[in-house]
Structures are given as structure tokens and as C-alpha cells.
Length: 401
Image (cartoon, rainbow, N blue to C red; front, side, top):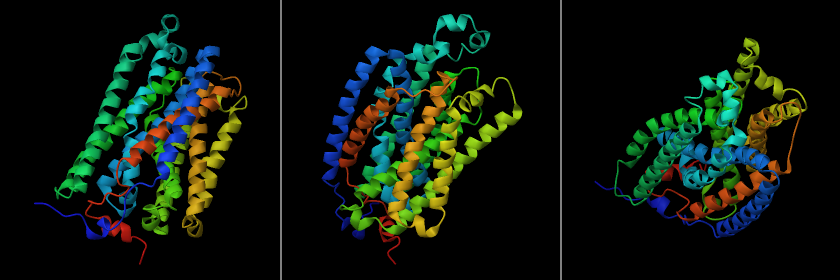
């Protein structure tokens, strides 16, 4: 049995705007120049280059993985909000192979980043010796390869089935996408738990937190939602999004952004409260290092700009219906996500006092140029609307009555 594409959806010109080609060129040029600057930085201070690369890479990877999580969430729950944004989520997931390639410097700089990767440090530390069965370079690499293989595989299947749905030849495709997304979402959270331990928590291998993986997954959803809002806001003045995107859609995205802000806040505060009240010698040094020597001002900045300001701007209905306000809040959250990851990683190397290196500024720009360029390239490859989705008419009519 076949199903034809909805007439209303087919009537729309869903071709990507020409401005995406310009964005792709500018982003890749920025990334290329940035990589040249980082190469010079590597010659001057290779150790700092690896440290800066790590937090910047985790930030951009987080947007790609957050897009994968949101895509599977949309297939599970349905709703007009996800249909309009689906192609943006899908384009984000198709950047995962580039993210995997950008992981290589972390492998090369493993000994500069992780104490457990240095045999001399392990030989002098009984705790690291006890954890050596898990924290060792070979197993670390295998886990990363496995995670990327499954993430990229999930993204490839979801993207392929979505395109097949556009052809209107398989009426049960929404059910199939939902059935894959359920276990896929579970694996994403589980794999992200292991990956966050490997890539960030093990910078300080004596410390541990059982909430850390969930915090990372929530922050990636927050980053991806904020990034999607920014891109939608940028394209809202061009076809086809100008004819499709309504204030109600942006209101829905504002509510989702608010929800993810609250989830991130809840998990971050819960981790702090449990560790601080528990007062265990293995756990409290993590926050002691981040609440002194100037790092406490970064923590305060995160509380104010990643929670308080978005909370105050996204709650009032009069503000969260205004696209300009929502886009600016999303930009603020993206900036704070980058600061948050820097605050998570940098004190592991400079616990005594605040330390900002110029490579900490250059690395996010360089990696971001490459990632945004690839995102724009992927977004240009397909129509910006899933015209074969059976609920496309409902999604396009959302807020027009």
C-alpha cells in the first residue's frame, strides 16, 4: 500500500535557500584559517593545543549528538514542532563523521590530557592502577570507535528512512522510525554516559559522579535546540521558511528550550548538592577547584546567564512569542554552553587559579568553522521540509488559525 505526499505540503517550495552556499563557504574559510592558527599554536605549546581542542570539540560534537537525540525524540512523540525542524536535526546528525575525524587529535594528545594514559603517573598512583583495566589507551579508543559507529549508523538509518518517506511509497514509515528511535534514544544516553566519563570526567580520574552522563545528555539537547533556533531564526526571512515558520512554532521551540534549561539546571544543581553535602574526599575536590582562584566567577556567570536570564526571558508569554527574543536567548545559551565546558575541563589542568589561553578562543572558532560548514553543506542537500510526512499539513497549519 502506498501513500501520496500531502497536497498542501507538496505545494510548498522546500528547496534550501541560496544563502546556505555562502554560509558554507564562509564557515569553511574560517575553519581553514583557524586550523592554520591552531597548527602554529601546536608548534608553540602542543599540550595547551590538545587541552583547548578537547573542550571545543566536545562542544560542537554535543550539538551533533543533541540533534540525534532530538530527532529520535521527535519520531517517538510526533508533533508539529519536530516536523518543521526535522531537516535541521537530520543535517546535524550527518556531521557526525566529521566529528569522528576531528577526534583524532585527542587520540594523539591522550598522554597530555589524561593522567591514566601516562605509564609513569599510573605506576605511582594506586587508584589509577586499580582503574587501569578500564582506563587505558586501547580500551578508551575501542569505546570511542564503538560509540561513533553506532551513532553514525543510527543517523544513517534515520536519514535514509526519512528520505524514503518523502517518496510516499511506504505508509508505515512513521511507525518504523518510532520503533528504531526508542532503543536508539536509550543507547544514545547510555553511550553518552560512558563517553562523558572517558572524555571529560577522566581528566580527573580520582573523581566520579553518577549524574555526569545524564547532565551531558541534557546539555547536548539544550545545545542542539538552541542551535536549531538560531538557524531557524536566520532562515526565517528566506523561502521556504518564511512561508512555513510561524510565531507558534517559535513559541513551541522557546518552551522546549526552557524545558531543557530547567533539566540542565536541575541535574547540575543536584550533582553539586549531593557531592557537597556528602563531603567525600574523592568527590569534593572537583568543586573546590572550580569555586576558588577566580573560577568561582565563571560558575556565577553560568548560574546567571545559563539559568537566571533564560528563565526570566522564556517564562513570560509576551516574550517567548517574540522570535527575536527567543533567538537572542538561544545565542546566549550557546555561548554559555561553551563557557560551561571550558569550566568543566580547564580547572583540571589549572586548579589553583583562573587560566584563559588564546588557544581556548581559537579552537572553538576553528572547529566551529569546519562543523558549521559541513552542517550547511548537509542542509543544502535535501529539501528543508519532510514533505512525505503524513502530518506535514498539520505542522504547516500550526498557529495559522
